[in-house]
Image (tube, rainbow, N blue to C red; front, side):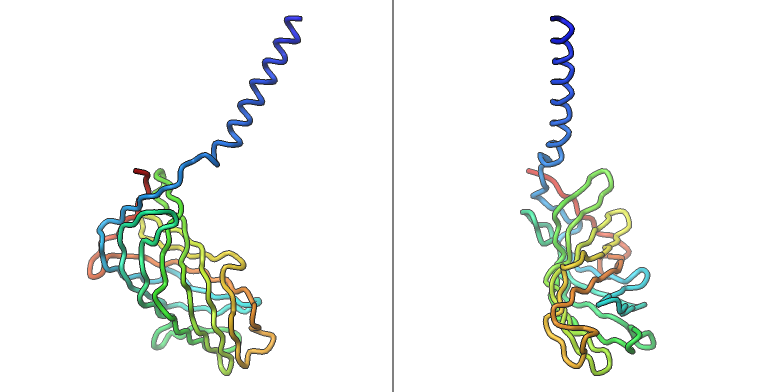
Length: 211
């Protein structure tokens, strides 16, 4: 009887270990205190690489984009750690383009930067850009996009990398766009912005913790 009992003990031990591995990620405590440094602070953001809005396979690409706003420490989860008061797409001599023609985008702000998860080992905060609201004009086609866009912020580089998931953004109105951009379409938005404290080379940081 000793050998079967020993086998049962081994199996039970393995099952316990597997259960512990399965539940441990879910038991992780989410950050509820978000420390922005400096805080409060005005910031500017300039794109690094192309910024692309894609609708039904049509890519609308901007080589120039910039934004500005304020950052501040916050509590809660999710927590708003920044407000984007202005954001521009395209510039004189460098308009946003698509196969349908040049693209003009006018944002209704403020947009928000919302923190949800922080990894201390990498200094990366995961969250999303919220309250997105923009009117896009391509020739005679005019449509409005609202929603949010998932992204990350990296303390070491100041990179706010936005890469929306399917379904986060929605076309809520569409005029003269036909089947190219219908109401209910789910665009995606992708772009990286380098953030600095306004008027300086200082990269602001965001750190999540628990009290």
